[in-house]
Amino acid sequence: MSKKITRREAIKDMFFVGVGLASAGTLMQACASRGGSKAAAGVSFTPMPDAPEGSKVDTRRWDSLGCELSLLGLGCMRLPSIPNANGRGSHLDQEAVNAMIDYAIAHGVNYFDTAPAYGESEVVTGNALSRHPRESYMIATKMSNFAFGPGNSPTLDGAKEMFERSLKNLQVDYVDFLLCHAVSSYSELESRFLNNGVLDYLKEQKAAGRIKHLGFSFHGNNAALPKILDASEWDFVQIQLNYVDWKEIDGDSGPTESEKAASETLYNTLVERGIPVLVMEPVKGGALANVSDALKARMAERHPGLSPAGNALTFVGSLPGVMVTLSGMSNMDQLKENVALFTDFKPFDQTEMDYMQTIADLYKSNVHVPCTACSYCMPCPNGVDIPGNFKVFNTASDELRIPDPTHPGKEFKQNRKVFLKAFKDLGAGSADACIDCNACLPKCPQHIRIPDQLHMISDLVAKVR
Ligand code: SF4
Ligand code: SF4
Image (tube, rainbow, N blue to C red):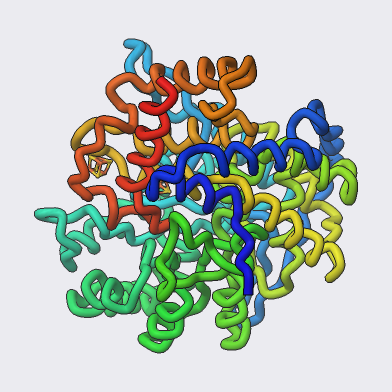
C-alpha cells in the first residue's frame, strides 16, 4: 500500500536524511495553491459580542464530586504581566488579574487553576480570589514536586512544605481540587508520590477536609493511564485534549511508535471508568488560536463567526464527559471571548466534530513543533530560548514562509530575510547554541525531542544564511 508523504515528513527528510529542499518546496507550493495563505489572506472573524451583563457561563453538575462547575475554567499559568521598574524582566499585573477574576466570577466562572510551578501565579491568584466570598469559587492547585524540595528531590517534607505554602499563598484553609502535577507514567507516580508517602499524606489532608478532591494531571501515553488509575482512587483527572491531537498526538516530535497517545483514547478511558475529565491545553498552548489563513478559511466556511480558538474550545466543550475546559488566558479580551462562547454554549453535533478532524488533518500537514510554550524545559543551562526558537519556526511554517533555497526567487529572498531576522532577534538564545546536554528532555510534557528539533531549525538557518 502506498504511503502518503506529508509535508512534515518531507521536511523531516530534508534535514535528517539530506534529501534536499525540492520535495518540501513542492509540497509547500502545493499547499499554498490549494487555498493557502495567499488565496485566503485577510480571513478575519467578527469578535463575538460580550456576554450580556448578568448572564452566566454554562455549568455541569458532577454528582460524584457533589458540585456544579462552570464548563469554562480560568487557567492561571499565563496571567498578564508588566515590565519591572528597572526595565529587566516582568512581574504579574495584580490589577489586571483582579479585573479578570472579577469579570470571570461575575459571569459564573467558578473554577480557577494554578500551581506552585507557575511562578507568582498562586500568590497573585490568591490575592484576587480572596476579595470574593470563599464559596463563590473553586481553587485548584498542584503538588508540583518535580523540581522542588531539599536537593531537588520529591521528599515528603518538601511536599508538606509545598502544600502549606500553597494554602498560604492562596489565603485559604482548604483547596477544592489538588492535582499530583504532571504525572506521565506509573514509575513517575511511584517515585514522586507512592514510595515517599506523598500520596498518603495528600489523602490524609483530604480526610481532614483541607483537600476536597484529589486527582492528577497526565502527560503520558495511552498505556500509562490505566496503570496510574489502578494505583489509587482518583476523583478526577486532567488531560491534554484538543481536536488536533484527538486521533493521535503527533508522532514526529512526540512519542515514539510504541508510545502513542491520543486525546480520544485518554478521554474514553476516563469516561468508561466514570471519572470526570478536566481538560488542559484545549487550544494547544495558543497554537490553535494562531492557525494559517488556509485553515482559518476552512473554519470560516463552516462556522462563520467562530474564531480558531472558538472552534478549538467548542470541540472540547461538546464532549459530555468534560468537567471543565481550562483555558490559560492572558488578557481581558481572551476572557470575554471565552465567556461569551460558553454562555448559552452551542455544542458541535457529530457532523461538526467530524469536520474538525478534517481541519486537524490539514493542520498536521503543516510542519509544526508541538510546543505549547509552557517553559517547563527552561532555563536551558546553555542559554537556549527553547520555546522562542519553536515559536519562530512554527510561525514561519504556519504562514508558509519557510525559505526554500531551491526556488531562489523574490519570495525566497523575502522569506529568508524575515526568517533570519527572527532568529537573529533570539541572540544568544538561538537554536545553534544547543550543545545536546539533554537536560531539557525529561522536562517536556509534550515529549518533544528538543535537541533534535533545535538542530533541525539551526540546520535550516545555516542552509539559508
Ligand atoms: S539539550 Fe540543548 S536545549 Fe536542551 S538543555 Fe541542553 S543545551 Fe539546552
Ligand atoms: S519544548 Fe516542551 S517543555 Fe519546552 S516550552 Fe515547549 S512544550 Fe514546554
